[in-house]
Amino acid sequence: MKLTSEQYDIINSTGDIKINAVAGSGKTTTIIEYSKSRPKKSKILYLAFNRSVKKEAEEKFLKLGLDNVKVETAHSLAYKNVMFNFNYSLKNQGYKTYEVADILKIKKKREKHFELLAANHINKFVNYFCNSDVRKVQQLNYLEIVSDPIAKDFVNKHYDLIENYTRIFLKKMDSGEIEITHDFYLKKFQLLNPILNYDYILFDEGQDASTSMLDVFLNQKATKVIVGDSHQQIYSWRYAINSLEKVDFKSFPLTSSFRFNQDIANLSMEILKLKNLLNNQIILPIRGVGKKVSNNFNATLARTNLGLLSKAFDLITNENKNISLYFEGKFNSYLYADDGASIFDVLNLYNQNYDSIKDNIIRSMNNFTELEEYANKTEDTQLLMLIEIVKKYGDELPKLVRLIKDNSVDDKKDADMIFSTVHRAKGMEYKNVYLHNDFITERKIKKLINNQNEKPIDFPKIFEEINILYVAITRVIKNLFIPQIYLPSYFPKTSSIKILTSYKDDFSLVSETNKDKKSISIKDKKSNSNFDKKWSKNDEIKLISYLNSNKSLNEISKLLGRTKAAIINRLNKLFEK
Image 1 (cartoon, one colour):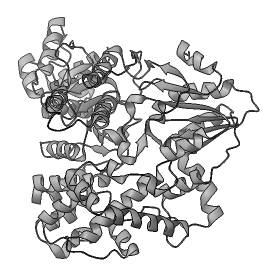
Image 2: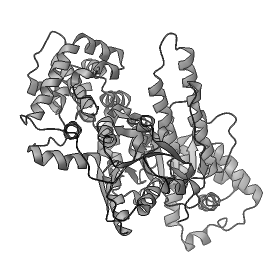
Image 3: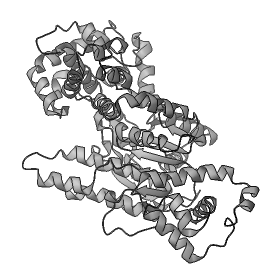
Image 4: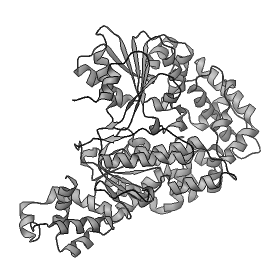
């Protein structure tokens, strides 16, 4: 493929560099070309973000004969250097709260569920330390990452106990008395001050780096390249940091997106400019040069599990019982909290069906109110999400979940609609993207600014919320269906960006498009007298107008005097122009 001048600048660079790359700008291609241009005898390490990226990168490097490039994730590299040398056993899924309480034999106090509350925060403190670059627990202030006032009050009252038990738990893992976690062996790797015998080390997704792995990376003598997108940092809740801001390497931009067109690029920049409402930010210009559609996927993206499941439930109960669905990360994963509680355990507690509760923590609660108090005191966002879903749907949940499962497919290629939160969709791309209305808005940011005398603004949190909306928008290849609340009033109407005022009607249009694409036969065309009726320019303008004004497919059919199949067929042709 033809490279851009920005890519050539990176390939021809020397010394340590950082690459700030916008969404869809060909990071992997640039890294491959950079590697190809290095001396053949050079030993190169490429640190990928996760296993799926690692596998894909390995295949690409091998296909090009670049056998001098070793591909690892931070965890796979640490695993090989720690697990076997210290004869550790691995706790693959990590520790549950009740397991931490049991291992540490935390004594109960008068405060309800004290041992579980303390264990939950100890577990988080352990993970916070393992993802940091400090060498001692005492060098961290756990209170700095607790934001909920109720949770903060609990931690503040019992800080010494939580910190002491955190050190004890880490010591038990280090000595091999108990199994270690994935984050622990990564931390152990950092504390060993490893020397990586490579000439070049390439660190991908630098905006969501583990501080402990960044410390290992920076302490190597190799030529270092770190690549990422400052505006795609969305994992701070996992203690990730934007390492692009932490290193003073020479900076190179990649500003041409090969995924989408200039209309989507312009909207992406407008969303990022929301940060300037809080303080001045450098927003890279984005050139949308995408022309080819790489897939035909339709995806609904939401900020939260609650928003996503609400959309899925609404869809499946709205005369769409034969529609095929796919969930990024698999549907079941949306029904569980991080600590293992299922949505059905929460529902059983809600209905006081105590004998049917399987999860230890949920079973220990006397009532639903106690569970809400526990979730607030531990700042357990996933559990709070399940609580809200149960409160909203109640006894309808089993039926709704069964409907979703009955209509789910294992391969996204077979799906009429893909559902995903933005975090699970990161790195993905879809032809048509539908945004839910649970993202941050300009109006909400301005409200926070107006009320900052009463409640200080959490700047990093708001910036990350803006990043999440930016990541959602930049998943699109062709058509973005977006609620009006996210569009600046001055933003022009375009063929690629369509106002989504009613998810139900606009989604039914696409779902029927998928079904009709499969079912329209020659016989259908002959039986529909209006199917081949010539479309005038005026007819097309009316069609788009009806679509943007939230008319249903049935309404559009009546207004234009054409069959649904004819309308869908025309829309497909218009969208491909």
